[in-house]
Length: 161
Image (cartoon, rainbow, N blue to C red; front, side):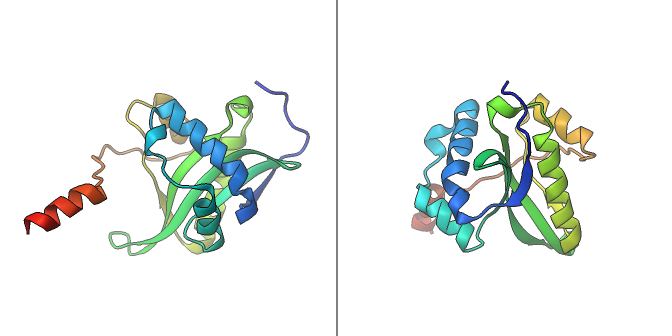
């Protein structure tokens, strides 16, 4: 574990943060064994941030990005309102257990509450540490199967019909 940085600020990510967010995403993918599934290129991440297709909050100390939380905005029919879809919460391995995840979640909660939104995300069933962290934040965890329909599978359906 690295020594605690002097000052940590939580800020909205700008396209210029893409180069620092990318290694965090890759670090997560390696830890989950899904690096081969991570197919975006750095310019795509930067463009997505600049066009508002994805948003991120970053924990920064000076020019260093220590952690990030990525999300998108959506509309939820069931709750009849705005929805923050959290994609990933990633704290660099060197900076874990120093409160950055909690601070990022609080900043996300502040944005969601301001927008009158609820928040939703997925957690791997095997990731007990993340589940325990989210429970400490007051999050309700529900069992649900996640369905993902790949482009290849959809093309096959279209060929058959």
